[in-house]
Length: 207
Image (tube, rainbow, N blue to C red):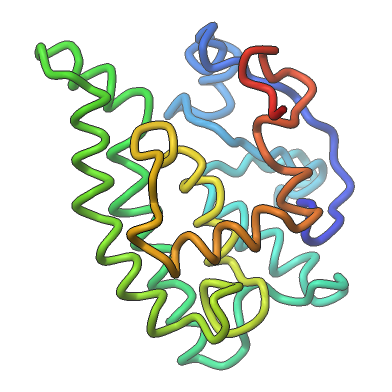
């Protein structure tokens, strides 16, 4: 949203209070996950269209708003570059993200396993692959692919914030760290940082 300056209205879903499991929310998004995007007038019949899942939403926003935005498209026009960006996104969203979700960690904990230790072990097993991939694809160590912001950065930055909760020292993965350090300081990423949102609990707000 911030990268393409998309006009929108935020509706906050408090995960710790279980808002995502309410009947009103699951009526919009049966998986009970965030985010959900409602596009007014986007349905074929002129009604509202409801989109779920981060990558589907990002691709929709990129297709609709990317061409005219100052940032440009987050998915490159070149087929090889586009596939390269998607490979990073798939590794982050398909391999790393599922292991660190609240639902999975609660399920692990319910089986008597130390969920924080388990999450740290997951990070330790997946980060080497991400580092190896970014060493090939990052031109300057500032962005995940090439030398401009792409959807790979938009997927990676929020997930590394989650990684740092369980695996606070990522210095052993210098390319991952340098990309995260650079991109997380960009204005659009700061604006999207969950620690800077109006509904962020005080104890979690960025200092």
